[in-house]
Length: 146
Image 1: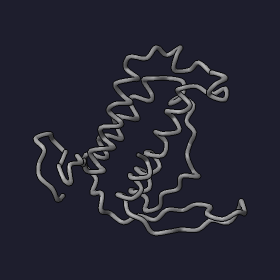
Image 2: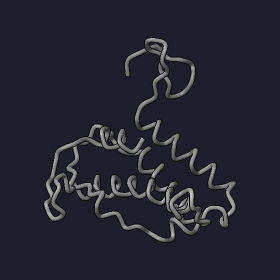
Image 3: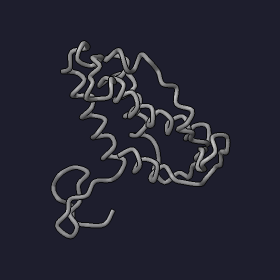
C-alpha cells in the first residue's frame, strides 16, 4: 500500500486521507457489528418494527452477514453466488449464531489473499432465469460488502 504510515495499525496517510486496506476495513466493520450484538438484548434483535418495513435488526444483520458467507464459500468453491444465500433463520433470531458466523468470517478474512480471482454467478438481466458468470476479485467483492 502506498502512503505514509499514520501511526495507527492498518491506516496509511495519503493526500491527508487515512486509508485502510479493504481486508482490514471489512474485519473492523465485522468487529463493530460483533461489539454491538454483544450488548444488544435478543428481544431487541428480533423485534419487528413498522419503520423497518416489519423487519428486525436481526434480519438486517443476517442479510449483511450472508453476503460475506457467500464470498467465503465462493472462494472455496470457485464461484460466488449471492442469489444462493441460505437465509439462515438462526442468524436473524439468535445473537449467538450471528456472533459465531462473525467469528468465522473474521478468521476467513485474516487468512485469505484479497487478490485472488473469483467468478460471480448471478442474474444480471431483466429476465428471472437468465444467469451469467463474470470474473472478479475478492478485493472487489469485499468492496461491495462495505
